[in-house]
Amino acid sequence: MAVIINNENNYKQVVAVAAAGCLVYVRKKLEKKRRVWMKRFREEFNDQPLVRELRENYPDDFRNYLRMDGHTFDLLLSLIEEIIMKKDTVMRPSISAEQRLIATLTFLATGRSYEDLKFTTGISSSLLSAIIPETCKALYDVLRI
View 1 (cartoon, rainbow, N blue to C red):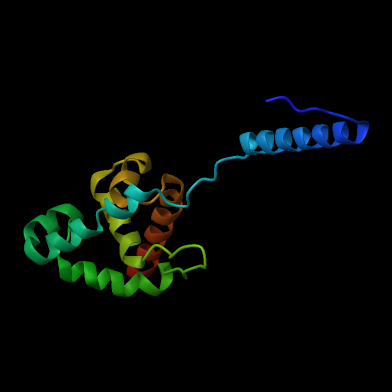
View 2 (tube, helix red, strand yellow):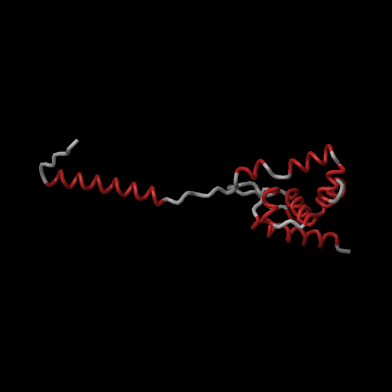
């Protein structure tokens, strides 16, 4: 399919359309793929449902997992909830005080690294590195005699 170019005006139009097409192609190639705020598997496969299941049906396993019974967990949570709770944003919901406490207690009970904990908690390792010291400080301040 050949394009017949009669005059200089048609030639300029063909060149302009070709250049515009090339620019669109290059721009699409260079567009950076946007990252997601939170990986989908972390929403589904975190330890919060496990903790609920253990607490409701297997109290001995709950005690083994967090090294305390449900009553003690509730007491600790009620003492520090206002201190460690964050507000939701337009972009995403905040990590609940319960999730923060579970992550901290799991870290303290197991000694696992932040990189390892991120897969079971569903919280990034960089955020865990902020959450765990903050929650430990809140626990220390509240329980200090």
